[in-house]
Length: 267
Image 1 (cartoon, one colour):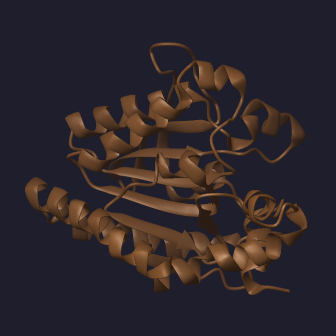
Image 2: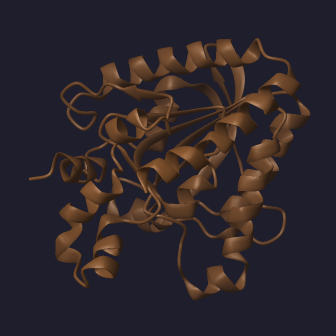
């Protein structure tokens, strides 16, 4: 079995910790804020003000849900346009008060329903990426499970991007890629190898800044993983807080521009 395909399966493991598990363990005083002020409150994305070791942050994450009831309530972590518009509202608030933004990515992708498309799904994702790209406050994004397509990238632009060891991050799911290339989803393992979507590959290509060791796996023993992640987030915030706004934006722009040569090299 492909080791990359094993990462896909572990990223989707039913017992893997989800966003609210990390929010409850790593942060305090999480005050959830609701709504996009235009249409509705999308429960696939949860966000609000919190504290990391008494340091204020804007915490945003995609929550898939543990039980069937919870998964339905949170639409399996697949956000509608109002979810991304809520994100934009929250990060602009963070910028206004000079509060760092921490995002946690875990989604198959944005919700592909007709209603979502009618309400401007693609535009909402594009607007979110644009806002994150020029936001005048530190941004740290962490992939904790499945980072799928534009639905993940919409909250994935950051000054630091981290991945848990058994997480994945890709423009398309292995099954979707296999269906296009081989006309069958049964080739998903081969597609996983071709996409190089696991944490180790993406780190070696320079697309992510750090990989958090999971030991036996976050689904087996989550506490050490959460401790390592909290330590890393604290260190990264310390580094980014030392930069003035102009330097922060210049480094973010240079990081994004560097992806051109890296993607070309992979292709």
